[in-house]
Image: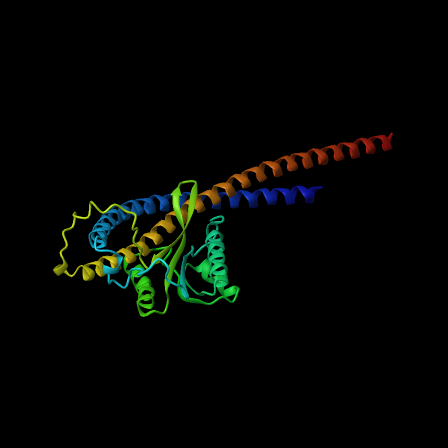
Length: 298
């Protein structure tokens, strides 16, 4: 019985130490989330201005019809055939963040199966250690592998990564590029994002009456301007996806560590009850033995 009491006390001590660790990790992630949220807020302000300018230029050019756009970044037809596809995935470098990584991996696997059934050749490009290790373990080739960028995203590194992808697209090595990542929705939830970033498409249903915000004439070489804007648009979309993913990662880790801390607390309560019961049993046993000894002496 004494050994049992000792084991329970050791378990309680161990669980309490784990609880301290998970609580500390939650506090660290909370601090990092605040910084990531602020970065995302500033990034969104820039993205809004860039998108408005981009939409204005497109709207002005689109007045002459889709065929008038000669930029290689744009889809020339809605009925284009896709033979080669690149999927960019973003996962965390670390775990302990619930289903954050596996949700992205499952979506990538789903897309791979879907497009391969259509006879499309699929290539993967990965950012984040967890996703890269998963596909390596399953013998699935990842063309580009970057570790450390999802944990500390910078615009320069994002540009370096996406420029290689854009170069392949412009050279015809791939027909479409999709990016998959978990995005930040709020403190308690994340939203899986899966969207094509190349080629760029034009919504022909959009109203064109506001196209005069930027005054572009034919002699202004609008296609060159559009190419530069398209390039910046894609680069920034890559960077914003990284920032968004980082905020979502910290949000997921806060939830996971909060749940782990609460579970540890429940386990400590359960073990404490077991300890008290074991002590009561030990005392009762000792009393019975004493009484038996007294009766034997009589």
